[in-house]
Image (tube, rainbow, N blue to C red):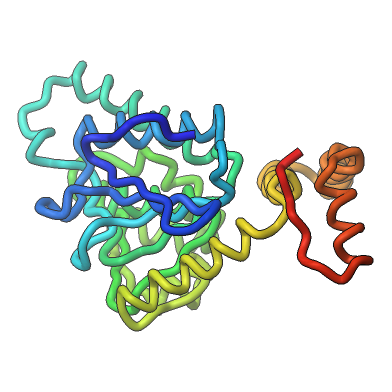
Length: 266
């Protein structure tokens, strides 16, 4: 449950069960400074500890120019090595918090997603994007490499050989490419359509049994890191935890009563 305001994030609840989170630095293309990474880590950590009434989150950027341009290079100009390392530890914590968020997170890519911005998209459960968005991992042009998960999440999303070309050549690609390769689920013509699509899907997720959704997300995420037989056992254990829940009983009753279920997350 989100208990405070954030300096670099705008958080709202546009409909029941849905949390809308915007990176709110449009004047710098939503580039991520130290405070932004701290806020991102704190927000997703709070949700992991207590989602409250939130059943799905949408992660987007403010404005129409960019989802996120990556790290704030003006802040990093002249940054001492030790400060750089401390900032990167903060980035690692923020990434883990997003990956570990128990509720589904939908990326709504409202504009360009470069470097750390693309890595945030990749850390979400799935993504929609405006057709004009462009994507890139540009770190090798700066003497570094993707360090917010990109070398691991991009190959898992689009395949090893294509990911190597993109990362090693720092080659941008279009929203159409992202959609064709499976990185983006759907393309939208403009920001209005993107917002409507993200809210529609988030609302559908929020209407389902929250414990079942969380267990399914966990089973997919962990199961893909296992061999099939081990993953099937993990799935069975995740399923078994739902049998005694009130939501499972409510779902069956509602089906037989021919009415919409009222899930309470217990």
